[in-house]
Image (cartoon, rainbow, N blue to C red; front, side, top):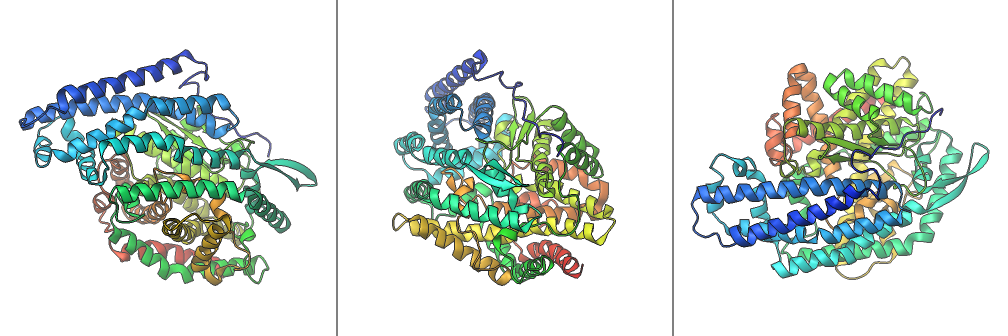
Length: 599
């Protein structure tokens, strides 16, 4: 590769941690919180027997104050999070972020108070929301908050839980991130020994040389073996805390809150997962075909992401940029224009380096009406797709900004948050496939696409099984690192089955995935499956409707914070509670697998 991938530009937020405006904004956020508290005490709390017009007016003022706090505070949060995600060695940023979290504890308490207050309004709330104005424009948010008030502890208990989380769950989460991001290893590559951060070592899973993949896998297993006990302590702390709070809040089980956050019901989850269970033999045929193409009897985990077919083994960052812009433009010039802006204005941090977290993500920067993307670009086609995926999230944010949505109107569930990102990946795949000039090039593209689909279905299902079993076992006591690893292996055996060499799986897949280490968002997995299959279904509709699709698509993205997943899907004639819809999406992958096996 002839160029170092870039680091993002955060100067539009703050010039540095020493920027006086940063401290001023933290103080201002605290002041806005005090103002909202005073407003609640003097004008909301005493409100009784108010007319619908009076209640609508107070609701509108409350919403506007909350939006101002979220807009102001998110600027600080994004900046500090971005610094820490790319430099976990930065003790000053860690300290400032901790102080900011402490300063915003009143917001967590106020959210609880307001949620309870909304729930207590009863039928007066929907009556007030009939009045045109700001409150009515935020009706979905207000009604959802009222509904979720059913799962609250007392005000004092919720306040205590918010404060204790900073000394428990958040610290366990931070420890996992610090341990995994700061660890570097010595690895021989291309004839020389290199010092590699763990994300770079993990990325070698897609290296074209089997010896490199196998050695990287074995070294990774060795590293996690040495680190498993502190990481198991982190995981036990997180899951134990969530279990305790779920029980106290009256949640029916460990999945209940995740379903509400995803804005889907159990019927939808059951229909989707039933379709996936039925499709597992199809994916196992893909894994078996891949093993055969690689000259192996069975596919070991360390070759799960091996490239197949012939394409450029590595892309420079500039080549990846050109590919993305060219192919997104075939779908929609506005989409390509947003990606162009992201590249030109350095919204992307793509360089691999020590201290930087693994994986990739996109953060909305509502204060600037922009986004910031973190990736670990290694030149593989997989990472090209990852960049396109994250730029899909940025386009999603852009659609909301263009529609003038407020922070409370853009609280999108993960199920729908993946819509634009999966669409970008699908666009890239079909555009590149159409240009494939040889069977080997076609095979390489099919491999990248099917591999991604297998991750969002087969692997995600294994992660769901793992996390559900982990929660249930944690209710009975602390789990050892080896017990956690055995749960992971069992989940992989259930889903991958005879598609892989069951003696060479990844028992430590729980160690470095940050998704398992959140107290606020459990089951950071099945929404990806939903997003992947929903995006596939939407692309099929685009192929039917052509350019007439774009207006509705962009409106859907703008409105993902203001309706349930079922209601938004119904706009496109999709019934997400029907197993048939998910089967249709999976059938599209089935066609690709048949072609893949035939090549």
